[in-house]
Image 1 (tube, rainbow, N blue to C red):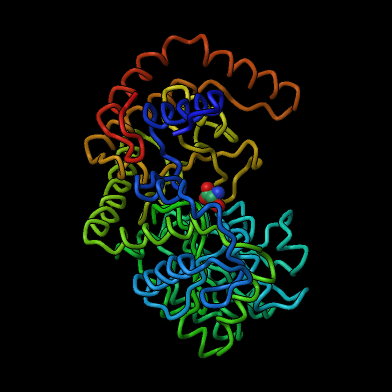
Image 2: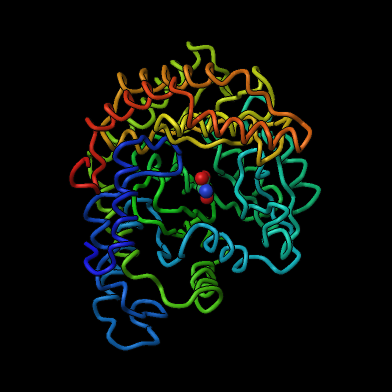
Length: 443
Ligand code: DSN
């Protein structure tokens, strides 16, 4: 509790109110438990511990060593790997560290194109990962599945050092075995970026990549429901390819890229891993997926088009092009107006641009954490379809001035159009019935 900074205390309360009274449908967000939030705000935040357990560059790390070892051991047990680094500050430095560990500057790296659902650090043209290494992006097919024929062709042509599978907007299961076959054919490392689905892997709702990939990385705050952070895991297959792989990863993190680990975060990750090892977490992961399936079926029933026609996981990508290209911005702003927080997103083959994409990305991890189920998913689909129908006449102009003018007019309408008020009240009322775990009371 903040006692001596009323301005900051007020802002934090405002964020708690926002989270409690609206519904997070961004698939990469979740609500961590009170225990994890307690670890984050603990005195571990004050301590320097550069190095690794048993080999630190600072004194006073007896507790830090135990914290880090506990987190590492829990990760090893949960994911079935022998080496885990829990120090990456987040997913981007984790991926950078992996490339630094296994590639020379200029080597080819292959990842899913950002606009097709990849990540910046999978080699996007404006990411440093494409400046330091030669990026060879592969793509998604219009049906929402990965073009594995293209992956194989590009891999054979470019002989990449690493192939990355995984991404940020993939509604279907990731075919790890097929990726592994291709990587093995060309002698590449296979890196599975399971940031979005780590909780589903831990909860047995998605195949584990551990038998297929040499390296597995994940952020810790998405479906895994921990604090913001990341982990890099080296599999037995990775050690068979290079017995020094784990040491190389550790060295790439420190001294390669990072300084002192964020011990408060590592403690939070440890708690998240304990939570994820419990039987209730399997139920949670199963519910994330069943909720996403209900939500996708209902959206379809309401006439919305989904990339790949549905979902295998926690994520749904709505294709808004049947009513016009580039309308994701209107959808995400209008949904925010009623308290449904979902983000605009590119769709495969998007006719528009990243700032004005044609898709809407939805996910069920946070709503499921709050205890919502089938009834609520049906209600949410109903609200989303009403909002999208209400804004159908807003078509994105191609000319810049006209576009900016229309967006301004649209934002004004969100303030003045009373139509939204009833839905906003309904969303708030439903949210009031489902607590956010880290917020003690609905304000
Ligand atoms: N920004 C994350 C997401 O929303 O998927 C990926 O890092």
